[in-house]
Amino acid sequence: MPDMNRIVPEYHQPSPGLDPGNNGCAAASDPIGGCDFSLFQKQFAPMISSIPRLMNASRLFQARMVRLILSREKHIASPDRIARFFGPYRMPGTSSIGLRKRSPELFQDTREDGIETYGHWIGRMINQTLKRMERCHASLSGKNLSEQFREELVEKIRIILEFRDEEGTPLCELIPQQMYEDVFITMILMILETDTAPAAPNLYKAFNGICHRLALSLISGLAGDGFLRPTDSAVRQLIYIAVLSGYVGINLKSSASAASSLLNRDLIPIPKHWVRHMKSVRAVLPEELDRLSRAMIDMSKNEGAAFGLDSTRMYFQEVIDAKKPTLLVFFCDDYMESLIDLKRFEIMITRNPRLDILFIPRNGRYGNDLAYSDMPKILKEPVFQQIARMCREGRLVISPYGPMAGCIDTRFISGQLMDQIETLSAGKTIILETKGCRNFEMLSGSLCLPWYTSFNCNRALSIRTVGIDMEPVFLRIPPGLKAYDGFAEPRTGSTPSGRSNGVKFARMTTLDLYNRLADRGYSV
Image (cartoon, one colour):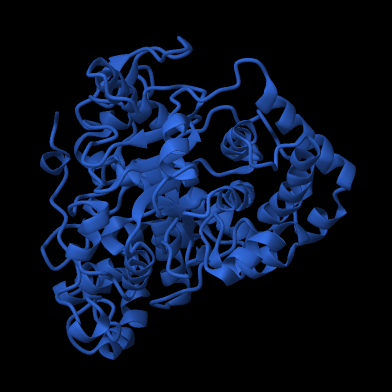
């Protein structure tokens, strides 16, 4: 199998040392290493405001910018601590965006798709991101940005993408394909606000507002149908419908958030006028929400509704009905899906006194993902009072130290999160579960733990890495094995459904992995 570290530049730890007094984390006083950070802050505003100055930025300034752009996490755990659970350091994701410069043909999803140059893609993505931000971010809302302003913004970002880290690697070679929108938003705000740490915009406030109401309606409907009981069939239904809920409103989501084109946009659509603003969210009639949640429940009951790859049997054995004390480390994803998963965990914890859960939302506002700051409102809802009690009892711990991005980047795992994992897993079996396709692609396998992950295969990158099209999957990737490999050495073929031909699949997809394991009598 191809070695991904041959194909993309080797990753180098960007922080130049550890603070022994900070539990093996990178020093908190200077999140980017080097000399006095206040000097960098003084240089930042005049530098970021001038294209000529950016073109002549010192190597030290460049390295500091690279570190700030890649992650806001100030307390990075040491590589050894991260490797104990998440495997060795590697470039996360399918590839860096820098690969687009050398091999733009690899980003054709099929042989028939056009080839887009790196420069054209950069300009198109920045303008697309800027357009979305104009509608709801205070720095941009209501402003008529000139063509000259847009051109200068794109040029500044092009320059910064060539900044090099301390090891001499360009920033564009350190940004995973799965994270480019998060990074572009950060860079746009740095330039607009001349701020080294601009506040993340809440681009999906109204969208998550309607998802909150819809999740409560869905949970009520599931209770009425008997799916909130601790039976095998009820738990399976909750697992499935939580993943299925990822289709809700994808007609309104950004393709950039998914890092590739989206399919099935109109499977469970949300009307645009529902999410124009928070007043629109509150104006939606309960009967309309109930009608949509009923459609979801009925869809999950349809004949043929099943996972394309299904490891729920092992999940019951290893997690739900674990015979030994077990900690499930759970990284959540979309807001609505996460609320359904909370109800599932309530049932799982009630069913098994040996199971505890570390629940990890985002540490900040990233797309339509669940954020730690959302949790107080959620736990006040009557339907989540049991979960609130389990939190007080320590059976479910909600971490404030989750990813500071729209997906998991194992290069920047928080030292405080590692503290929680190590403390809560003492004397227990530890299992990892993640939600969402971007988390799957970022981790990619080679972990030191059994890893469960689930998502809908409704985007090009998911189909190319998993090998399944149009169906949701619930996967188990055994420790030490890659979930997919060889994205940069693709093979061409048809999707299992026959709907698409000439697809550029990874050299080894997850479907290939499952088939090889089955041939050897290994059950996943």
